Amino acid sequence: MALIAIFTFPSPVAAIPESLPDPDPVQRTWMRADLPVARNVVERTWMWGPVDDGVQTVEPYAESPDAARTVTYFDKSRMEITHPGGDSSSEWHVTNGLLVVELMTGRLQTGDDAFEDRTPAVANVAGDPDDLSGPTYATLAALRGLPASSDGSFNTTRVTRDGVLVHDPSLAAYGAIAVERVTVLGIDHQVASPFWEFMNSSGVVFEHWRHVEGSLFPNPYYATGFPVTEAYWAEVKVANVYRDVLVQCFERRCLTYTPDNPHGWQIEAGNVGRHYYSWRYGTELPEPSRLEVTFNIHHGGSMIASTITSETFFGELAVGEWQTRSPSGELLAHGMLWAEHSLTGIEAVIVQDWPNTGWGNLVVQYQLSFSGLSGVGTLGYSVETASGMESGTTSMTAQAASLTLFDVTVAEIPPVLFTGS
Image 1 (cartoon, one colour):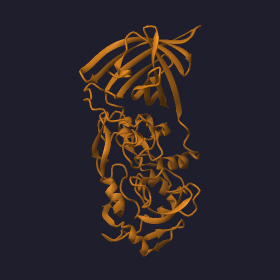
Image 2 (cartoon, one colour; image 1 turned 90 degrees about the vertical axis):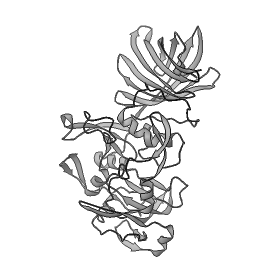
Image 3 (cartoon, helix red, strand yellow; image 1 turned 60 degrees about the vertical axis):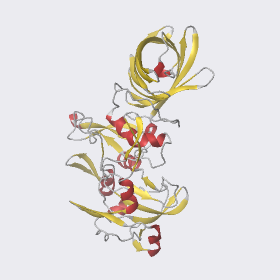
Image 4 (cartoon, one colour; image 1 turned 45 degrees about the vertical axis):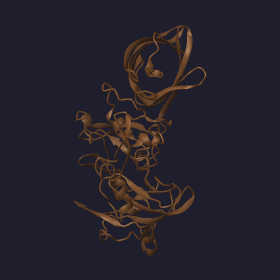
């Protein structure tokens, strides 16, 4: 799974250790586009949504092992691994389903060729949930079969909630035009210029544990799929204010263009993941399980630091962030983590991304006695410092003062939790 960090610090300049493990495929997919957004490194729309809003579940799918697959819902979409035995390094190993098609048609997909008939969704495609003027998925579903706009024509058509189309020449002032016609089996639509520019855009992405410049998507249709409607303007209530919003739905997501939004946020992805979950299950996307734990770290008879972890649970997998501070409160280091929790212990990968880059493997076995919960374990680490790579292993013991507060004693001070200096 992916990880969220809330700090804004300079990117690490040290080389990334070659031995640093690759993240889980779902985590890797989330991190590439959305970790820079979470860290305020870049101003642009979430493509998935905050990781600590993610919820994982199992859904039936005929072609998956045991006819079921694990899926992860975010605000903007749903991640799926239909064939877990496939090539996990492939950019298509993790997919996001044709949720917009299902919401529009009312056909809930349970296999490559298996469907369950429902009714089209009446949730608002964009804007506030209580908006009664903007189009719904059912509204736009009725427009899927309309012909494509002419090449280079301005997007000057408004759509009402009832699906009525009205020509409004004044909308040409926004400069949105039909620039890319997509003609495939069952689809013949133009992509509007603001969306086509976004789908082909480059910027800061997160790959192999560092921020780099790159294409936002491996190909323009990777995240969205093909367009299933033309682009239409609508009067949409956003944060209780009615605005002109250009809306275009694709197979996997709906995109909006709001000209008067701040730079970087004029293009946004709709909350298709939340809309779909509510349509499918008849309830709102539930709150994920989260936990914040403080580890007071001792060495040589004194407390030398505190490490605070913030984790979101996806089954037994927890993902999140950590920061280590001195007893006086000075920030010493921070990074990311993912961990497998069980009744008998924990196995975790700890990634340090500031001030130096590095990682550690943590293994702790729990013991329950009359004195409470305790643990013994080891941390193997590798950190790139100014003087070169520093690696080692330290043993530790832990005693629970509560379920969210532990006293940890380390035999040696591990640099992966501190400065690496």
